[in-house]
Image (tube, rainbow, N blue to C red; front, top):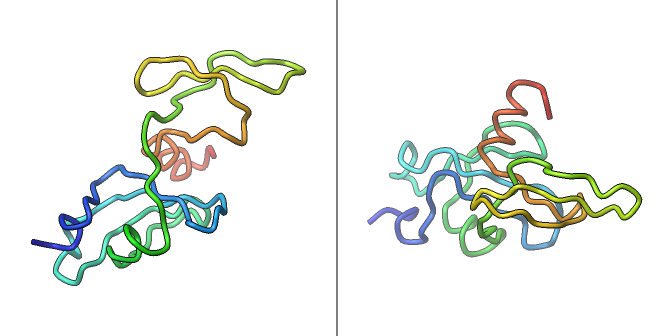
Length: 116
């Protein structure tokens, strides 16, 4: 059993630093470097792909962000600062912009295209 299987790491998962900073890591590939227990992630803060040890990702430095994720802004709240967002499960959720957790593969594509 490889480390990514042992810790339940899967492609598309989002991890945030345990210290509460805003940087997020999106898991891109778990099999390529599985023999050395590394995982390829997209670092949204730096806008690059990098490798990280599976144990450090899952157990030490990062926390898994549970879905659902926001897909797009659905309605703007104006002066209240609270907007409605369409979520991956089809629901609409009211949140402040700094509380939104965007769908990971959408963010990765936007960064690659220079749109983020």
